[in-house]
Image (cartoon, helix red, strand yellow):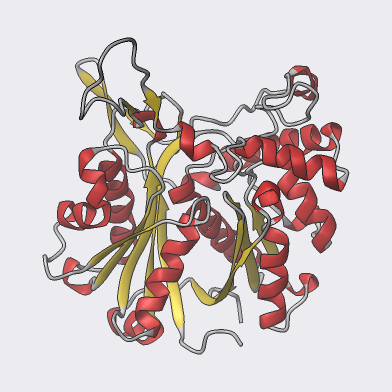
Length: 399
């Protein structure tokens, strides 16, 4: 059964996403999150005193204060010290989990107005010296890349890209189709940037440049000039005989995103424009070595729980962790390409896991607003073998 509580979403906002080692690499992780959270509050019109919970998603705490991320963000925003803060992680699904965890606080009666968000700054991930604390007798010692563990399956130690190769090989997906999807993603992102669709999501951020500042207002990762010929020239990244390349995989990017999650009555009392209703979610486990299949059973379970079919859903956002993930979901679920990922995705915009689910949700919200559609589903595969999906309903449909 779907959730019985009336929970609404409002005022989504995000930073632009920076390329790995790019414009956001010197911005502390919690500072990125504060920027997006304040933007969501400004768009909602809420005051500090209205917020009674903050939920924050993150997979790699890269700075000393990010170990206490949610609480630091709440404090830096100036929220009252009495407001509790929760940090959550569910791998690539962390952004959706932030929304879900905020909703669970409302359902349980512990919250009425919450901020839900997430952030990553992988560009700031450290190298660590495991032998540094207790010393070593002699010889060279190796620094470990703390980010390396993020990209490896914890059970087999395969790269996540190798699990995508497993999915492609065992389920008959082909390189040409992956490159075609990657090109489509880049083209759709370019169109969404040119039309101003993505600009609606983004709260520009000031960056130091020399003795002055510059305003970053666009995502940094999209490659609008990429061609199919160039994509086809790329070598496989994980298996010499494989099909998964840097071009048909998600980009490593930095950024933050937030949305306000409210009890519907609380939204009315505070004059907040409720934009979407959170109807339900589903999380599933899958075989870790085939983690890319995660969206398929998650979406199936979500639709079955709510007595809906694919044809009932006006828009789908399936995270482009790898193009094969989308091809597999499209084939197995019967997803129409003309109703899926119309504004780019992880391959073109990039994939900071703590923020991706939130970016997908705000994209779906804006698409429903623009088209008058009713339902949208967001879904992601998750490293170590999970899938997650979320169902929302448009509250701004014309009557």
